[in-house]
Length: 440
Image (cartoon, rainbow, N blue to C red; front, side, top):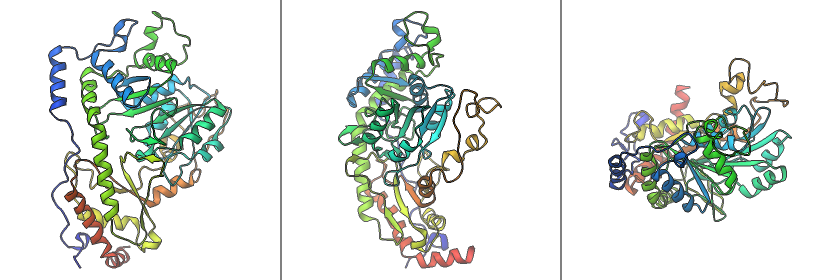
């Protein structure tokens, strides 16, 4: 039996895993074309033909919308900006509540705070780590204005049930699709199932332009409001008719021509890259060794998962070993990834701490020192951000293991090394139990 690296043996692999980098000649040629044109941006923050941006922006928006069979695409400089613009377009404001997930990147929650609304956390469904419709229904009040649904790890949320709840209460649904490009729910692409869908082009997503994002919608009025909020609305409304000034304070969320051009080239690669993600993970799952207490979290049979990350369920009692020690042993066997040095191996315990436990929510301080929006005089609800409000989220964070060993930069030989690390740990569980006992 080979000795674990954690216990003084040699690691399975020392060579860094290949970088997640799919910038090629197509992107380089497009960038040079844009540079040679001299037009790096053509936005004007006043009512003018160029209010909507330049040729690359318009082409990028059209192509992205066509890819998802959506009517409108509105590009932004980040997914965070897109979420903020979507909440603003939904006319969310002081005194309103927005139902959010506690298990996501924090921007999916602070988008509500950006417009002085109060986030209300619903619990997740442990089968897909997305918002549980039953929990959403329990959180709805007369103050609920919007729901931000996150398709976490690339698994679509149960959108039919969520939309039925939203329609019954006249609530706007915003899909956070940052981790789910080209994922499908019952044959339909995410980002088109709610009222608005927001995508990310951040450097560590499936495809990227460095930074950037895009919002999809089939609603002409919402598309118009998104464009206004993106580009200095308060400076524009003097030159054209606007049916509502609500949230028309305006920002600069504009994307540049270079990023849009790169995004266009990356979009052409997106389906092929996703296919390789799925093939890689299928290989990983089929060859994962049997380890008592460890099981694969499988997607629902009516979705097409896009696998930003994958989840494993870990039961420490069944394994007889803490998740911390189990991960320590795996980490000692595997190297980091090129271009992500300092992050450690791409496998970790949980995902993010439940967001309601972050200092902003525990102290209820955001705008100024008076406690807005949580203690805003316009808000008439009761806030509860205590431990235990979302038990499934807290359980998932304490028990799951997430990994990214399906990235399309990985070849089967790379995944074999990861599997070998798991096999090595599986063969040394008793030694690890003794190690944990001696070091506790």
